[in-house]
Length: 48
Image (tube, rainbow, N blue to C red; front, side, top):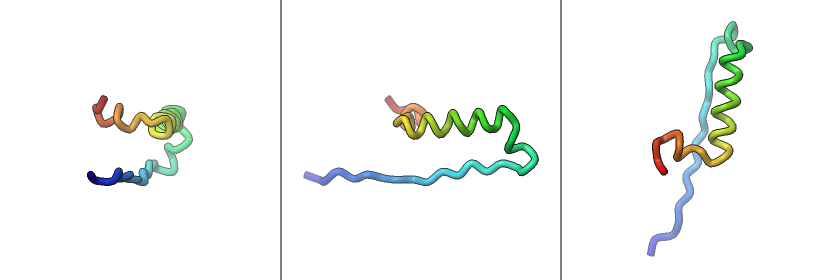
């Protein structure tokens, strides 16, 4: 039997200096962070 393997990835959200304080940019960053920290990576990738 194979042992369980855990993969870890880093994600960078790069924004232009002039737009990083826009509400829609900060909202997207917050949404993405909450999704990934809450175990939603599978949902983001279309997995169940």
